[in-house]
Amino acid sequence: MKTIFSHKAAKKEQGFTLVELLITVTLLAILLSLAVPSFNSTIRDNRVLTASNSLITSVANARSEALRRGRMVSICPSSNGTSCGANWSQGWIVYVEKTTVATGGAPDVDEVLQVEGEVKSTAVAQSSGNNWIRFTSRGMAEASVTVTVKPSTCNSGYKFQELVFGITGRATISKQTC
Image (tube, rainbow, N blue to C red; front, side):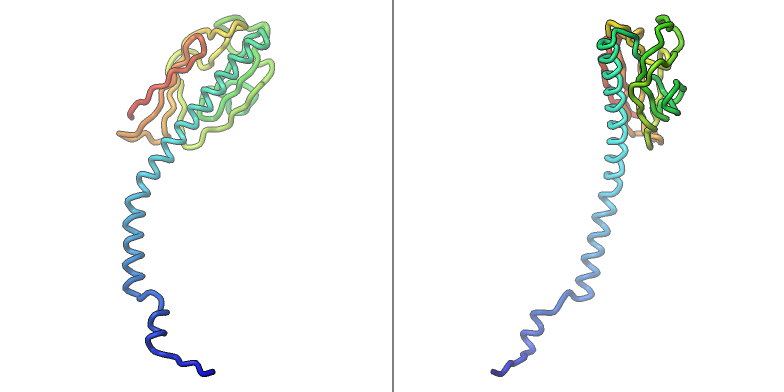
């Protein structure tokens, strides 16, 4: 059996030419340069949304625990996971208040129920009221509290969320622009 190698058969099995490869790479670079900026904004918006949802879940947990335990349960910013602090971006804790704490009094942690760690690339700042959200044994908050959740760099046109926690513990979310 004789195998004949023809020039036509070899031409059909050749790969890409250098020009075709360069055109493909150039088109890919152009498409990526258009997609990356919008992808970055999607990532930034998702981080804000994740931090907002995490905070809303923690507040709902605090209210639920207050009703279940029949005691005051609060949520406050915390950098160490054991005591209240001032910066919500460093994380927060849900905790049972000591029985000696009076309504409106400063936080006094008896038992920590939940620890939420640092919120990466997102700034969480409380804009009104106390630096904590406290629920009574009947599940009512002491006061309405507003918390803003923004990207770390809130340039003009960026979106952020404003969370208003009413005295019933219900969160109202509104999107704002930097």
